Every structure is written in C-alpha cells, then in structure tokens.
Amino acid sequence: TCFYVYVSKDNSSGHPDGFLGVNVDDTIFAGNEKFHTNVMDPLMKAYKMGKIDTHEMDFCGLHINQDPKTKETVIDMDDYIRNMSNSVSSKKENKQHPEGISTFGRKPTESLRPAEVQAFRMPLGECMWVTSQLAATYSFDVSDIAQRMSIAIVAEVTALQVVIDSLKNAPPRHCFRKLPGGISDIAVLTYND
Image 1 (cartoon, rainbow, N blue to C red):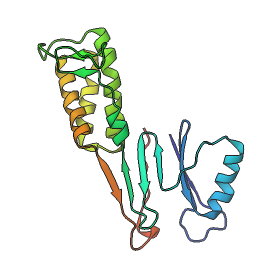
Image 2: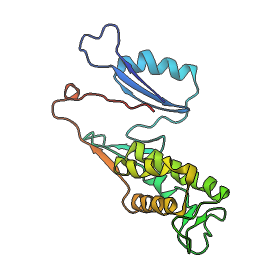
Image 3: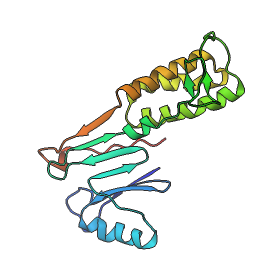
C-alpha cells in the first residue's frame, strides 16, 4: 500500500494539491484541478482504469459515501463484514462451510486439526483486516488470537466467533463532517504495515 501527497511547484499555500492511495489494483484519489491535470490525467492515459466513482465508492473493502452537499463522509465495511467467511460454528455440524470448524461438544483446550487450522486462517485474516481499517476496538483480541496460531485450540475459535458475531451485529463505521475552518484545521496521518 502506498500513499502519495502531491504539491505543485507553484503552490505557495502550503496545502497539498492532491492525494493518491494505491493498493495493488485499487486506487483512491482526491485533489484540485492542478492535481487532476498534472497527476491523474497522465496516470489515466498510461494505465487502464475501470469505473471512476465520485461521492460513493468501494476501496479495499471500505465503502465510502460522501454527501455532495454537506461533504459529510461515512466509511463502513458492512458488505465486507456481511460476506466474511462462515468457517467457524458452535453448531453440531457446520453445513455452511463443510471443511470448517465446529466447536460443538469439544473441550476449549482441544487442539485444532491441521485442516481446521487452515480453515481458521480465513476468518482470522478477515478480522485482522477489519480491525486494522475500522474496528480498532477488537484489535487486541484479534491480535492475541493470531499470536497463538501455532498452538491453535478450540478456545481461540470461540473467541474469534465472539468477535465475528460482534462485527456482524454492529458493523463499525466512521463519520467525518466538513470542518468549519477548512483543510488548514486538519493533519493527515497514515499507517503502513
């Protein structure tokens, strides 16, 4: 993942002209006319880009919706969370994901079988992505479970299921409102893993 900030040579305001985020084949960008002319137009000529959305778009599992009038922006992962893997179950038989894991009637300290460890990686990775993007509340729990993957036991499956259920029952979202003072009142922070 890369994040670029563009400031044109003749920019004396000290404010960026535009921003570009790239993750594999997904891009997200915002900027003024100089940014579009000097950065995005040449990029769009050099590389084939699919549909360009304004105000409502998806980027790396994030759904971003900006009200054109108020500029209020809401970011959620509702679709991503709704479509997360169902390989974990506390029911007697896991019919949704036959090669999945059932914790029914098993001791919490029982080790997972190799196929179960493999099946466990998908929902764990999905939870790690959601917590790194929007749901920091669950970061410790998911990170703690991930650290014990080498000795994965049934209790870890149960703990992850609690996180998955919580995410699905109350999907996280962030809302950003337009600042009365404008862009000069904000600082841009990035996190790269």
